[in-house]
Length: 270
Ligand code: VGL
Ligand code: ZN
Image (cartoon, rainbow, N blue to C red; front, side):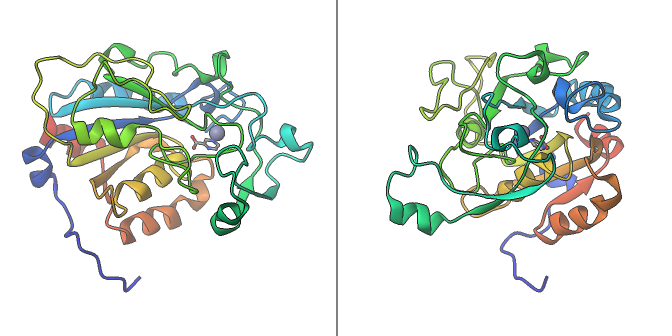
């Protein structure tokens, strides 16, 4: 509120002039009906996302996966505590060996979740029916056992960038640079070798969940250093707590994120 912003509000007219990416956040088995952290209505957005995936207006189509080790810090089981309780977590010593650095980075509040999206389990697979053939890359997040990352760009301590920003800045997926060296990796690439290298300016975000990973990804996308023109396609997302989603939409809008509908995007980028 009242904060001055460098960016002017973007419109779909500016998006068609730039290079746009579609980011499909965490649309995985564990986040849809039948999964361990199921978001109500999760399955219903899959056909909608497929429709968006088929639009010619996107230069890059990237899915993200929440991709946790079995003893991840965000799991209630890891701490022997109640699910949905809040605890404080500290940066892990292997990534922040200096005690002073760990103090500076400080503790974070962490909600404890049911075990979900464990690497190599059916729960971390992309949801059935999602058109994976249309994807240029799959980016992994939350891969280090001591670090939570709701954002598909980086964790709040800045210890584990996922490689997503590099792909967007590069404007294409480079088959030779698959890993970013910190446990995060790009799973699969299908970019056309002959494609022109123009950085992505606009990111359109869909998927699960709108109050967590979609929101944190969008909030990072507009931040200094990233500064993408950022869109959330609201009817291609679902919330863990739908009755509280309006306050999250307002917070996103206050940072310059523009909320649009599938129909608006189909009309302009179709
Ligand atoms: C998510 C809670 C825990 C999400 C991931 O994808 O929104 N939420 N891990
Ligand atoms: Zn998670």
